[in-house]
Image 1: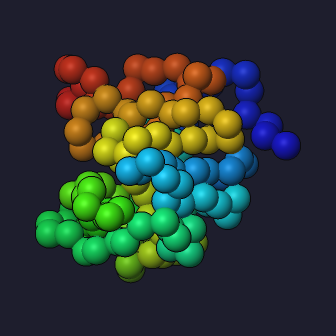
Image 2 (image 1 turned 135 degrees about the horizontal axis):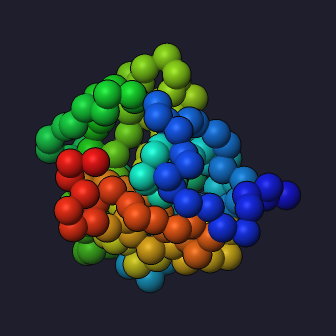
Length: 159
């Protein structure tokens, strides 16, 4: 049972971020098919961000994942590796990322993948389609029980 209140503001999420099991099934659609589904995901909760969901590599059965160029560093999780997602002739470049060597506090998501909701056809938390976190850098999934403001919105870079 999901114990999340009927709504929650992203401002109450902690800093440093908190890692916890996702309470609901996660599902990702791309190129007209389900490319990933799991009840074994995690979410990262961080101040001013909607949750970022991480799925185990075994959840991605309907696509091909290929390493993508570039990298980034999270002060909390470590160095990220990026992934492109392919289904037949459709490719979403740098659509996901993972932490092959995360920091100790995030060891549970080693090699798990997070996906930018805006680069997929749809991402679901339980039965609800999530909307992408504003901006192009952050990868949170916004659901109707969550209120912003969210990092990534116009004017939020100095937060």
